[in-house]
Image (cartoon, rainbow over all chains, first blue to last red; front, side):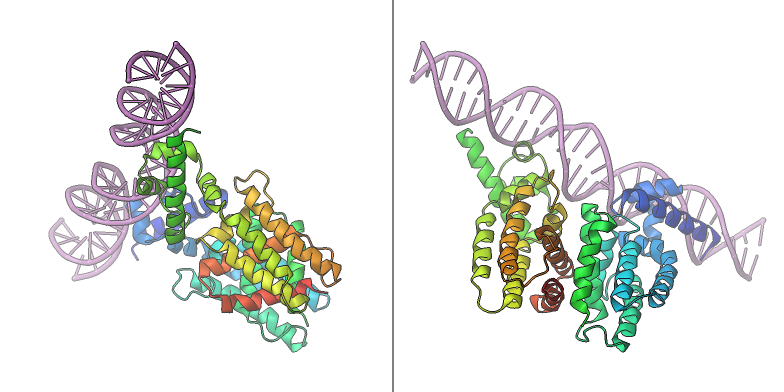
Length: 182
Length: 182
DNA sequence: GACAATACGGAGACTGTCTCCGTTTAGCAA
DNA sequence: TTGCTAAACGGAGACAGTCTCCGTATTGTC
């Protein structure tokens, strides 16, 4: 990759990060290009679709997911607390951008999605938490990480769209947790 | 309302019904106006926002909700079957249009939404099912119809976006049902 | 320093939203 | 009927966002 191309790529991602955080995923891409100080053509060459840009913006965020799963695994308390802690962190993780929960959860399980790598990271992180609880024989075993990701992601999507605060989300997560525990 | 106004109103709703069913809620409104044989001005005078049009299209569908709740109440089997039957019907009801589940569930609890009346009908229908099960002391009593609507609506939204078939949705509904039952 | 190869960027085609306002029509009263 | 007025119509067009094409500029190599 040529030096100028790399520079513009980084600028666009940085402008997009700010824009997505402030105005959500449906903000104007031409405006992001303008913010980054490049033409729209440059943006669309680097990122043919909106999802490709979203994927790039999420890249830095992936490491954070692993860390959070690790922390959830060492969380004090019984299975219910571990599970709920992970759920709450999961919701927080995918809610950094407005519209994020719906975007991520909708792509979950879709191998053709541009953000599939992100979904896989989330799923395997959740899978680790689930496996650990399965070792303790605490959760039902007919449920997959994908289903859990969809259940919790669905709640996150609703909360995001309705702008619910975490206090209102908690009881819904409890229902799902209780439904999963043996 | 003048006769010509009434005629155009009905034509627009009918064209919108078809368009929403075939192409989802984000279809072009000018195209709907064209399908209905009216100018865009006429459409926007009758329906200032997209949601107002969606609300009108949903009107006929409301009666159906009540019926479905009635049927769920007379459903054979234990509380778990009654609840799951209602959940499955609920998902089907709000999934008649692509994008419907997210739209409806996102507006749930928002008193300022143009489709709030539809949300209230759904909520009270669900409330009746919930009350009946509460009489039998079958469900936990710290949960509200609004929360249940959001839980099931969240699943429906994910299923709609990921184009899951009912067979894949069922296990997720079971988790929620089990989490709600005592 | 010359020359490909690569990348840039903005004009503009296209699509959808929404409004303004000149024109038409329904419905009523004489 | 006819005439009148309030109500409704509808389409031109302003505006915003998407995305592409292609002439121009830059990079890095020989």
